[in-house]
Image 1 (spheres, one colour):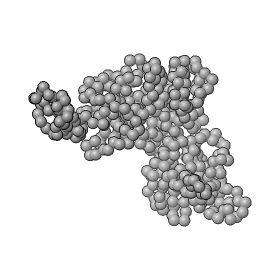
Image 2 (tube, helix red, strand yellow; image 1 turned 180 degrees about the vertical axis):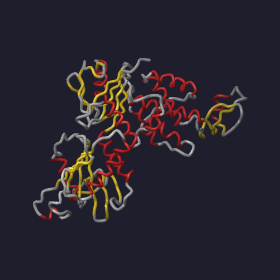
Image 3 (spheres, rainbow, N blue to C red; image 1 turned 30 degrees about the vertical axis):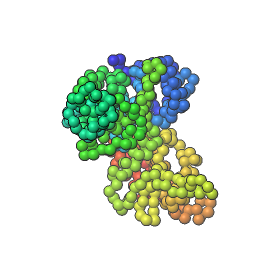
Image 4 (cartoon, helix red, strand yellow; image 1 turned 135 degrees about the horizontal axis):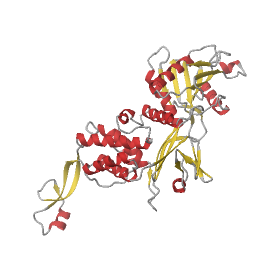
Amino acid sequence: MANSKLIRVFEHQAIKLGDEIDGVTFDSTSLKALKDYYGDKEGVPYYSLTNNGVKFNKFVGVIQVGNTVIEVLPKADKSTEDKKYWQVLLVKMLSVVGLFDIESTSESSLKLKSNSILDLYFALFIKEVEHLLHSGLAKQYRKKEGNVTALKGSIQFAKHIQQNLTHQERFYVRHTTYDVEHKLHFILYKTLRLLKQINTNTELHSRIGVLLLHYPEMPDIKVTEATFDTLVFNRKTQPYKKAIGIAKLLLLQYHPDVITGRHNVLALMFDMNKLWEKFVYVSLRKHHIDSSVINSISKQTDKHFWKPKSGPISSMKPDIVINQNIDNCVVLDTKWKNLNGGNPSAEDLRQMYVYHEYFSSKRVALIYPSSDEKTIINRGEFVAIDTKIMKTATVGSGNICSVISLQTDSDIKKWQEHIYKTVCEFMTPVDQENKGLN
């Protein structure tokens, strides 16, 4: 089992054939696999093709090509080039939004220092299956048909006569059995076999082998999105949820090269804009305790704004809506962009103006990660052509539309608390502009 070659890059970074990153050369084999994967899928959102290379987009995570692992990390701070810092931050953000269990992996012998996020997903899945095996695999009832030596269930006369004309000691029956052969175990077994094929971490290889040795052999099944949609968990199978969740990620994102079998691709990639939106929302919900400041926090609130004579109505959907009271709400829109000390784009500001009008919001804000070493609330206002436009706030109050640049922090609990306090401060009118928060 060859060790993996790990390349770490940042989002929106381009790499070319022959580039050496972290002591690993981006070779023609990896480039060809990424090109083939791009072509087979008729384009993927994770990266675009360039002249003898690829350029990564807004997606972060990990792509394994053969035994080369490319880890794409987020980056918002222009002053921080530490890849370990951004890797830890990404894993903790994934944990907060429920896409990764940081507590379980922290107990593992694997450390972030020398391993990729993919290794950590593998390790977490292995740990979960080890626990299920140790606790005893859950059994379920299922229908079974075949020859038995004792009559049970209902006899299938046509097949019984066809197969047992000269074997009067046997009965062809359909009956109910209670065993471990069911869909949950089919999925876990298929995932274990996949890990044996694609894992390049020697620390995990022996654990995978031991699991396959003790895990009962299961039939191979074709896995699609519908396979997971039909799963039903009960009291006995609730402990399977975490392992099945990881299995779903791995099985649905694995794309084998059926022609040569040499350039298989596994992509576990996440839209950084959506991850940032959910992270901010979860952080606000977690620390929401003071109803005098915030009554309720909701996400993705629909509002119709255009109705054609025929066809569907168009609607707008801001990221987060905070209700302070019946007559007052605050609209927040998250953007994972590096402003580099500048102002938002005109497009982003127009979008916020529409939210301001249609939600009758007294305050709206764009939330970005900070490109500086501190959090900044840059207070601004929409320019009034007519005083009627400003019906929901006082002209010159300086708090109509603001830009919140949130400083990142690898201490995830401290960062989440800071996000909540910053939003609460923004919601409280102040006269001072560009107020920095420590």
